Each structure stands twice: as structure tokens, then as C-alpha cells.
Length: 251
Image (tube, rainbow, N blue to C red):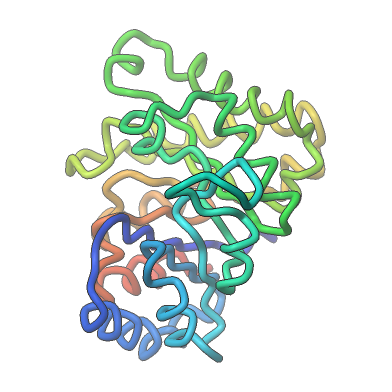
């Protein structure tokens, strides 16, 4: 059975007192989602602080990005080893904002995925199409290409420790959400592509949906056969909404 994962990507938001209150609110309600794994992804400067606030809570900590390089003279970069040292178990790779705003291509994302695996981190590989690509009927082509870039570099084996997140770019922060049918179709495509390499790993990998998930649409999305949780943006910045989404994911 795939345990649902609800991951809160805080992006570039938060200050210490806001974060303290947010984590306290999540901890207060974490018992309601005992059958759901929770993960928070704070900005880099607050990783140690959040790690201390999460101590003993059974809630995962992750980084929002990593360098594909090892430690060294790379100003502004954060290495996988640094994330591990801060207590991270997960890290995002290929979030659409990294692809679009920072020019990360499929090969860079694949290198970051590989680096995360080598360091013992669980990468959350983000894939998804733009609105223009969807309107051109290229969703399958784009998602398969993004996934294939990683498979070509690492093979299927590392996906036993990884998570995939489908995030249609047109639904991130826009208030638009893929319908359950649209989301399920792409999730099934992702699982099929992985299963072509290994039926076992394809069947066990968790695939999250990301894109304006809210408490009022979460249950319908999570009811789909191949949707195993969510990568949550704006709604993760409020404990009540984040935990309501987690509750919706409970089996």
C-alpha cells in the first residue's frame, strides 16, 4: 500500500515567528493524519530552526532545491551534504519555478535527482506542462520527456526511493486546478512509463499532484487511483488548510 504524502512547499515565504506558529499548528493537529506522511519544505535559512521545532513530531523535513555539484567554490549554491547535515530527508528537484525562472533544463534536473540519491536524500521529481503545451496537445510528450531524462541518467532503480510530483505549470499559484480526471490521466501516464522499466517500482512509487490544491478540492483529487498525495504551495502556509488537506488524504 502506498502511504499518502502531503508535502508543504513554503517557497520564499515566512519569518521566524510566523514559522513557529505554523509548525505549532501542524503539530497540534498531526494526530488526525496518522496514516498520512507529512513533509515541510522551508526556505534554506530556516532549515535548522524548523528542524528544532519538528523534533519528535514525526514530520519530515526537506529542501526546496539543491546543487548538482559537491561542496566547493559555488557561491550561493546549497549541496546535498548540507541538506543532510541540517536533518533533511527529502529535496525537490525540477520544480517548475526552477525550470522557468532559473532556466533549469531536463539534464540539470536529472543531475540534481542523481546527486540527491547519491547523498541518501529522497528526491521529489517535479514534472508538468505549461498552458501553451497543454493547449497544443503536448502534455504527454512533455511529461514523458522530463521523466525520460532522469531514467536515461539513473535508470529505474533510484525511483524506489523517490517521489514524483505532477504539477501542471498552468495550475500553480493561479487558482486553476486540473480536474480529477485530467490529473489522474497524467498520473496514470507517469506510472505506466515507470512500470515499463519495472512493474514493481512503477506500482510502488508515490505520485503527488501539485497545483492549487485546497481543502475543498483535495478529497476529489486524492480519490483518484494514481494520486498519492499532494505538493502543496499556498495552502501549506496556514496550518488549518494544510492539515485539512492531510485529513482528506487519509485512507
